[in-house]
Image 1: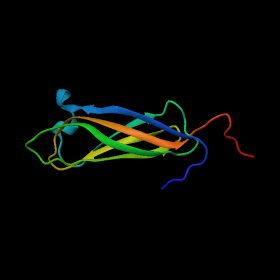
Image 2: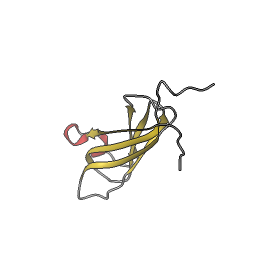
Image 3: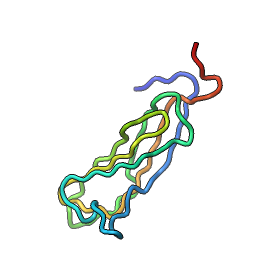
Image 4: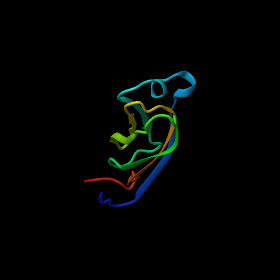
Length: 114
């Protein structure tokens, strides 16, 4: 658990990570270990590294293969993070959308240290 003092800020959004069905991208045509990273920049910076939660909100997959997915927030800073999606084996994913929520201390004019 992360303890916060002062005002708490929440930022949220969603991003289409890829649509590989249309252009024959690696998540649709490839096999084995595959990874895709997408930088996310917050509209306003947090005072410190926030806690970030990610979840799949659209997952368009081939029904003839096994479904494998790993999603996480990586390289979290007060100004943003990287959305990371991984799959492996014979999984074929046409498109993927991810929602995220960041919670942390809010920067303000009253936030200062001696």
